[in-house]
Image (cartoon, rainbow, N blue to C red):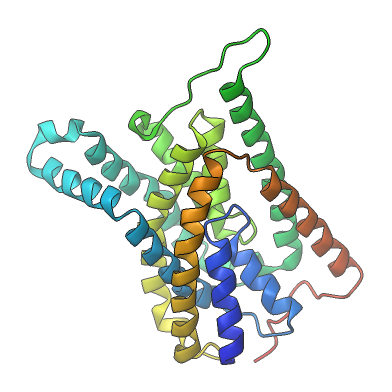
Length: 290
């Protein structure tokens, strides 16, 4: 992989990791459109360490409170009533599905799941799901002519059932095109959480899963055409860009809907279907390069 390619892919990772559009799909598609080798699952996992470092810094106060309260809850049962301690336990519980499924489906993640036809399908289907969830949230928040606005849940309302639901939604992102933030935010909106609460928990829930995945894939990151130097460079770029995107996205969702992302996902998925059907792109484009 060239340094220019690593710069572009790091930029794409940083721009798309926190938006509900799927960073893994965009890394795969960028390489395919540019006729570069498929960067692979290991490269994706390691560059995500950069974007998760941005999460750790942006939410550092929240994370410090959660970690501190969680440790206190280990030795004081009364401390477990603290909302921060409960959030810490629920982040651990919610991380279990993606941890188990990530190990079980490792071969599929690195192979069949990277087929462009599957990515096109998940872009469209999950785009529609996100659109439905967003409309439901807007209806509750706005009320109607004969209906009062409905209170939606905040992070303090999180339960074990909801934490596991978020976790299974996050696990769906093992398939490129689903989007980690898109799936977890959609799940949160569908069970009654506010946009901000769903997004915040989505980002917190991703930290242990992504860091564990990145560390697990480190042994394969420098293999083949994904050399260590460009991989580290891409990770740094992803961190810088990702931090700016988090700050923008959290402001955006406080007043705006997800419909622009829904439209983008559906159009990109349909375009990808058309390009594969026309023979412009092979479903396995880039896998035989490098």
